[in-house]
Every structure is written in structure tokens, then in C-alpha cells.
Length: 212
Picture 1 (tube, rainbow, N blue to C red):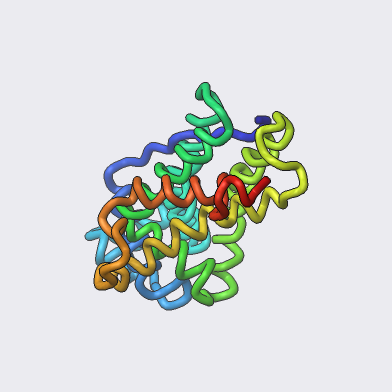
Picture 2 (cartoon, helix red, strand yellow):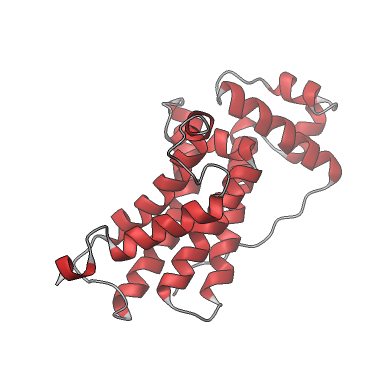
């Protein structure tokens, strides 16, 4: 799969504190509603120190967004070099991405705010640039599965990729509600949820004899 691997970015303790404060505020209020002064206060630093690391708020927001999606990029890096079938790779991505979504909920809330919840135009432009890169790599994985004749050539690879990501995102969003629905047994088992989604995606819901 010919895609650009993600490089792990390291930050100084001061820079990391700024990124964490910015992520918290951007996730809660959105791009336009957050001031550099508020970020400096939460990070227990000064505005000049923020500008020492980031030339403006756009650059800071871009760094926060890149950090938010970096885990998915690194997961794709690992899968590109790993042995196994396309189904195994897609299953591993689904499980790994959902784990990241649930364990880094501030990053998830930030992405949802700007990509799914009608964030500001300026914030959406930056978010789209960063998220699109990771999604394109996932689409490329599906296309690779088609080239290797593991899946049908007549499906839309972007739609297949979208279904996996959408299922994970909705699991995160709806989790407080599904906790109260007794028929749902995968509420506290994200791995079982991912396995079930992948099973239905590959095998459908019809009985085998009805598929013939």
C-alpha cells in the first residue's frame, strides 16, 4: 500500500501542556470561541511562550488536530507492515481505532465538534485537511483488498471505510444511552462490538443458503 507513514511527534513538557490545554478548550468551545489567553491560563504559562512554539492560533489548532488523529495514522502504519489478510487488517484497525476513541475522549470530542457537529468554517477547514489524510489511507487499504481479490470490486471503498469509522464514532456518541438498553450486550465490550461490525460487514445478515 503506497501511502505516507505517520511520524511520531515529540514535544517539550511546556509545548505538551499547551497542546493539552488547547485540546481541552477547543473540544469544549470550538475554534473561534477560544482565546490564546484562555489557553495560556489553563496551561499555566504565558501567551509569549505559546507564540514561541506556535506562530498563531491556526497553527496551534492544526497541531492539536494532528495529535488527535496521529494514533490512527500510526495504527495504519503498523497494519501496512503486518502480515495477514485484508479482513484481519480491517478488523485490527476497527478494534484499535475504537480503543483510541474511547481512551482519548477529548480528542474524539474535538474531531466530532469540527467534522460532525457544525463547527466554525475556519476550524472545519483545518480539521478536514487533517482527518481527510487518515481517511484516505483507510480507503487505500480497502482498495488494496480489492486489488488482491479479497473483496468485491463493485463496492465503493470509501463507503466501506466510512461504515467502519461511523460505527466506531456512533458507539462513542451513543454509549451513555445504550447503557440503559437491556437488549444491547456489547455496551462494555468494545472489542465484541468491533468484531460484530466486521462480521456483518463481511458476511452480511442473510443465512448462507439465502446468499447462494
